[in-house]
Length: 119
Image (cartoon, rainbow, N blue to C red; front, side, top):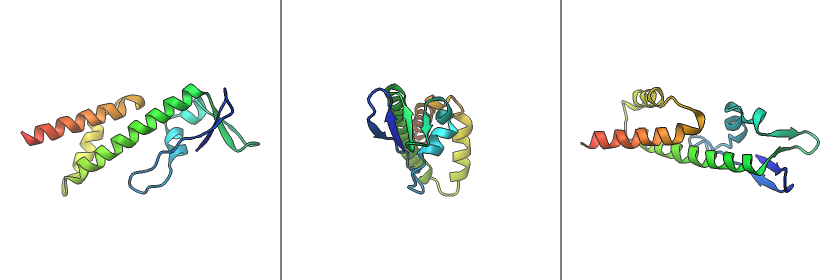
């Protein structure tokens, strides 16, 4: 997703790839979180989104944290065969929190679960 930084007119890229399909889901990811309405302006004339540098950096950090979380979830759930769906449902039920807190809450949950299973 191309972003034109308001302060500098520099074009930067945000990219959130779905871990399962490896498809770029950046617009869906940001849109589902309400970010397209709150943090970006789309110019049809230039066919680009506009954002401040601060918002761009915030979203770049969130995307990085979510991709790291996705990797952790995938690794954790793939260690279960028959119980995979049940474990995933429990994970999301237990980790219901604010959007920006989700990666740290989920990673902590998984690390605690792995430690408990190892005891």
